[in-house]
Length: 165
Image (cartoon, rainbow, N blue to C red):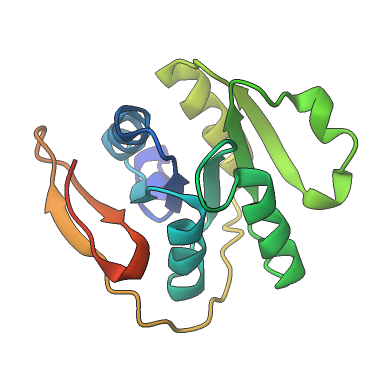
């Protein structure tokens, strides 16, 4: 399977409260062929994870309502085996050594480049498997809207409302 075709089969959820950082992640991943949904905080991210199947979670750590580490803890408590990448300016890979049961596969220290983001994601998927999960159904209905570049992406907000940034 060609790399672009393999990427187009991967669905990624980006959870980031900073609108510019969220849009950067979505645009970079979408331009390189990934299917990307976005949520603006940990609670909205949890709703999306319960409503949709994903192959990867990329989450900020310091966010309102539910931090990234606690979002990953919820995943593990719900026995969701979804791989997670933590992006943070204050939490490093060394900090993760204290909680190996979280199963965070990478830590991107902010600010990171498009190349570092793609490198972490591509490395995770380089073995040719799709780690996808089976999620429960939810009433969350995200709105799909194009951004300025014409890339379609989903912005998932609490209570099922959505919109483009």
